[in-house]
Length: 74
Image (cartoon, one colour):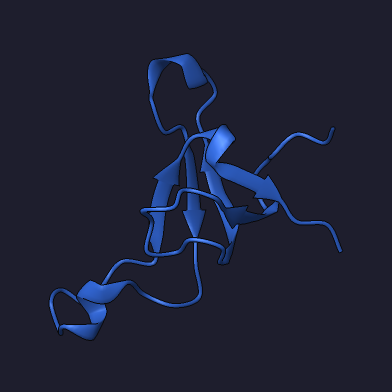
């Protein structure tokens, strides 16, 4: 199995996430993942619902654990 590293394309598998089943790019990953519950930051093309409401421009990144991500190949 290939590791999820910076620049990898991943599909989100956290059901309660706004980006569920969307594909994003890993922006960063903590060196010591045991220190954080969600050590992987993923960047997306579209912004979340905050942007649709006109609040603060919306978010285009979110943090996830490795088990909530699926590596996208090709």
